[in-house]
Length: 83
Image (tube, rainbow, N blue to C red; front, side, top):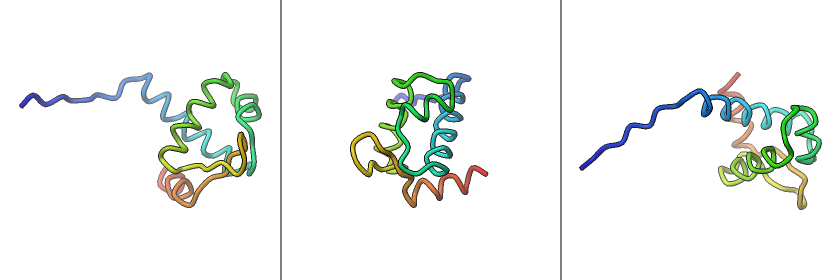
């Protein structure tokens, strides 16, 4: 069996850091929109939406209503770990 070793590169590290920063912003600003997050961070709205989609699939954020995000208890736990 062939085993693949995944190495985290600089681009991956940057994505992880940005995802954690987005999670922090969602925690600090309940009911925030992707456009507001992207404006605060200086990144594109599309990148923000894509990251929020992944965070939602991981159950770190949830949508209160379409386009409005809240942090979950699991998301809060992840942020506590990354302090």
